Length: 140
Image 1 (spheres, rainbow, N blue to C red):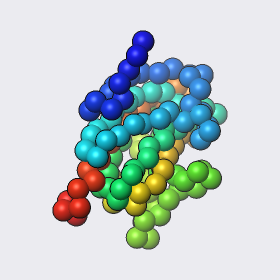
Image 2 (cartoon, rainbow, N blue to C red; image 1 turned 90 degrees about the vertical axis):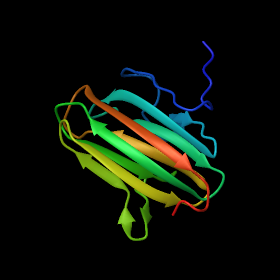
Image 3 (cartoon, rainbow, N blue to C red; image 1 turned 180 degrees about the vertical axis):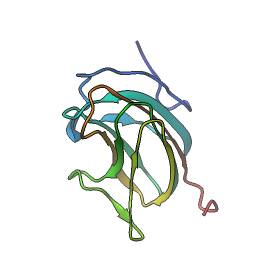
């Protein structure tokens, strides 16, 4: 099955053991200068999910995170060493309890970034997220 990740919004659902539980095997999010991506999945205490996205230019990125599970889930934007990124003194993460949502908007420099989704308690905790990218310079 051939999927085009460049054409706007992509949505798919994954299960445990899908090969994305480390930075080295992160799911690739291919983005154009103005596009969006959404996904949903499940995480457990020992099985986080990772996504990788690369920005060719300085870009505004808006994230919408949702916890659809029973236990808390942490959504973090991390670097290649799996450390949470700080921009303008703000660490980029959201701790969400069951059923909660959070929006996060950030202007990133060009580079490669990762989204890490994990839980410290649950088994089979469901989540969803969406991100939208705009690299136009007049959107600050």
